[in-house]
Image (cartoon, rainbow, N blue to C red; front, top):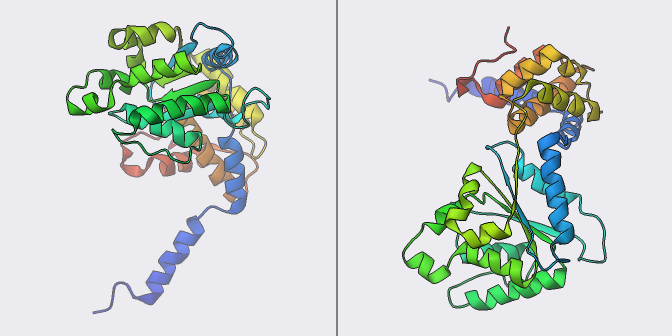
Length: 312
């Protein structure tokens, strides 16, 4: 009896893994694809809403806030990241702190929100305890004022509704998260962008006072409409220089891409980025259906139970 499959078989397996590893050239091409953003109509409207509260939040006495809703993978988090990454230089706020973002856990507490924001502002003492909570809340207000922060993006904000329904010791010790958000909007003042699922539309039932401050509603949708989807794909393809994706802009291929990704932006970006990796390592100038077939298999796995529209 031999140990495992023997040294020769082990070396063969290691070599196969090396062959599968994408080349540096493929990685560079995929990174360029991954960074492309397309302002399709709903995305552009939501971005304009965020720009508006960013501008007005500290200038007016009326609190400024918006909600941006959409299904998982619709681009809510990407919108927040893009906004924060494209902040202009200004003397009105400290560089890099004009807009900040946090993500709520499934059961958010005031301590989590205060601590997460203090960390985003690089405060030296972000840890929170029930004994220090009130002090740290005031520290956070002072830090936001000092940095000149104009807008806070709160991702997974639909969990605010779950927190509002919580009872017991945790809520007694840490209070209501919507209360502290209102406090920041009133005292700093800072604008707020709530990113979440359609559950956020029920915010008024959970906290009518916060809902009144977060007045404008935006929804990331529309890519289920064929003409909008086709326009989105064409715009995306035009922005990519690292590999030729032009075949995807054809009407039939764009439709097949919609079937493959179900019109979900996260799935779209994952598939197209993977296809770029495959094509570059195949030394191909243009991404082909064969590259997309292999990319679909790698991005989803054979056990995903999804039909590969490129298999034929």
